[in-house]
Structures are given as C-alpha cells and as structure tokens.
Length: 208
Image (cartoon, rainbow, N blue to C red):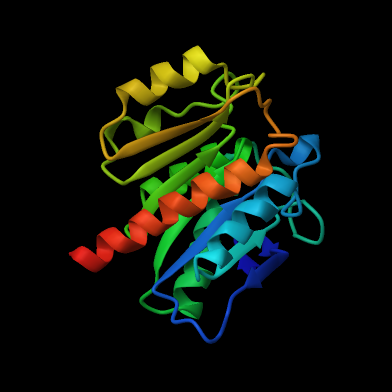
C-alpha cells in the first residue's frame, strides 16, 4: 500500500463471497514502544470485523516493519491513515468505513477518521487519555465506541469517563472489568463488544 513517504506494509483480509457494504481499518499502538499491526488487540479487532463480514485492513505506520519513512510524532502518521482510507475506498468502492484503533492508534486513527466523510463510525480501544489528546472528538456526531479496561494504566477510568461524558451521542462505552491496558486474558470480551457495535452500525444503515 502506498503511503505519503513510501510503501506501507499492510494486511488486508476479507471474504470474497460477502459483499463489502462496510469495511474496517485498525490502527496499531505506539511505534516507539513496539507497536505493530501484529499487536494482539489489533489482530483481534480485525478478526471481529471479519466475523461480521467486513474486510479488515491492518497496516504498519511509517518506520515500522517494512513500512518506509520514520516516526513523525503522530502528525505524519495521520497521513498514513488517510492513505489507508484512500486504498480501502478504492479497493471496495462504495464501502462505508469503520475506523478502529488501539492506544496510540486510537488517537491517530480516530482523529483522521472523524474528519473523513468516508468513515461512518469510530472505535477506540485502550484509549490512552493520559498520553494523547482526544478533544477532537468533542464535536463528533459519528457513532463512537470505547472499549476500556477498568485498570488501564494509561487511561484511568475516571479520566475516560470524564471524556466520554463530554461527547455527543451516539456513543457507547464498554468497561472490561479488572483488565489493564492490553486486556490480557480478556480479549474475547473485547471482540464481543466490537462485534456487537459493528452489527449495530450495519443494522442502523439497513434501516435508513
């Protein structure tokens, strides 16, 4: 997949027998702390989309794995997300896109997705409110889901709840009780929460 500063390593998974009315992009955690598209939360979120019949695109931000370029403090990485949106919208013309991200990937991905008309819904997993700014969501009217561990060390429950309370509907938050930032041992619950939200989005568009 071509990005703003070179090729971006990516994995696209889909069932060719299922019409791609919706598709998903999943953004990975912080590149400087080992984040890649193979992160287990990212992988499982992609799996959730596939189980709902939606093509799922994971990619490595610039400077990660075989992707060209170097870390650009989040600003350049937003350009990588836009390149992924361009690719997916060309690959599945007419498909409506759901933008998902984990940790750093939620801040970068949701910011790009909120501003893009091709994106119809946003999913943030393990949002790191102590490290990233999510104020861009305050005026968003797009459907939003947060999936957050109650013991997340980078997104304390009180801070995430405070952010959530400022957001416009439609919005949902799913608390994974007792889980930390990486949802260790609780990824099945993450998948279930994401699948339920994706299903609701698809059904709501069928009704309109």
